[in-house]
Length: 295
Ligand SMILES: C[S@@+](CC[C@H](N)C(=O)[O-])C[C@H]1O[C@@H](n2cnc3c(N)ncnc32)[C@H](O)[C@@H]1O
Image (tube, rainbow, N blue to C red; front, side, top):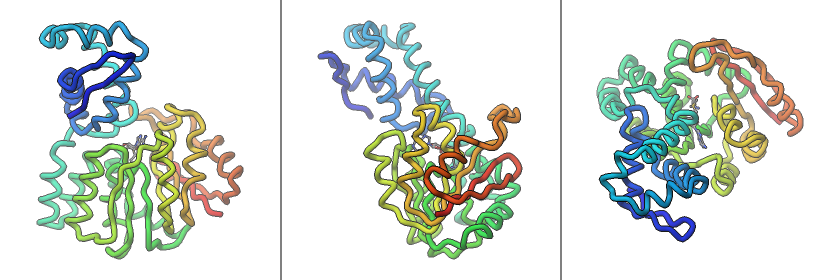
């Protein structure tokens, strides 16, 4: 659980911070939310609401839980989390490990599909995964190494990629529990050269680590739109730091609510690619737009 927070010479004890972390995670779709994400947003909130900070430091714990201030903070952090993270998780998230154990036993596709369905993005691709990777690799090369950034559960689609198990598959995610789950998957499926690492793309020093992975191909599926909402032009930094021969970037064509998005081709992204001297191909597959960048 969290440590204490010191802000403006006020100390919010570990016990009080834990109250908030636990409450935020009470919702089914947020049980896997990283503690540092919650703390970072709590600190930001308290910096702008010092009266709430004073209250949290001074009030009786039993009163805090029932207070409107506490409810407001929890609501605020959940909102942030859902915007960037929670909305991608379907409710069966806590069942993942159980489903994985079953899949490892049976090796049946239907058991894998059950896991893919616990994340909105992989759920959407279930019907056309095989076709998708055939298409991508026909425009690139058959990779010996992959770097999947903001991977979610996409590495679990490996079965559809038509690649050898000794491929080096590096997945990065910012949510610690997803990273652990991906490592469990790699271990259980005996993908010995593969692993998952934790990288928060919004943190400068962490983003710099992208440079250290040199792979044949890099996937950046459905990540940039939401990052841009948090930090404008961050895509430029992210793409510049990638050291892969091919970068495959995707964007949703439909919003979470199923409405066709106004923006189909992403002109801003095409401009960015040109500015960085990439040759750009694109294609659409069902609900997703894919760009392939190469030098
Ligand atoms: C729409 S999902 C796409 C997942 C996966 N790439 C796919 O298409 O199947 C967006 C992913 O970006 C990750 N993400 C969001 N913010 C991030 C950040 N700051 N750093 C790294 N990953 C982040 C989320 O955890 C989530 O898994």
